[in-house]
Image (cartoon, rainbow over all chains, first blue to last red):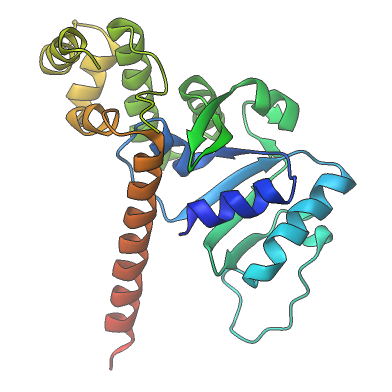
Length: 167
Length: 71
């Protein structure tokens, strides 16, 4: 996964999005590994076209589809919520997040984190807990337990978050 | 993280208050020293670590697939 290039491409393309899922967990300090990038995006035609234009140079194709299967990547692909494989890694775009709702609701639960010099919106620990609880997947039980402990750790230590800010 | 915060954080991890979420995580077997160490990194350093971890996971997955595909 090339998170930096993915963020730069979307940022430079003027797209509105929030980093969610496993990548957001790691940015918040979790030690859990993940292999893909999940983004929640603002569902309007202009933004969807911006996302599609930003990602197009990285050869998006359908994840799990046979090699060589004819595939047209465009704004409609993003609207359909396809899981994509790109030169930057596996990427998924979600218009809605379980437990939170659409982009506006997700954005309210996000925090600004400086990543690679970009002020990036990343889902908060509290937001991640809500989303994972709503998804109610067995595999998320451990993640929820870790996130709840991280939230308590944050409250009890009084640490500024996300921290530190050497960059 | 100040030395005082570090001391408090490590105490919370080693001896979480009974009934707390930290205690529940410890009981579950989650090693909270890992996120604790991650929080000493800048967000960009965490992002780099994420990239490396994702790459390693992919390589392991592909190696497993190659192994299983052998006759």
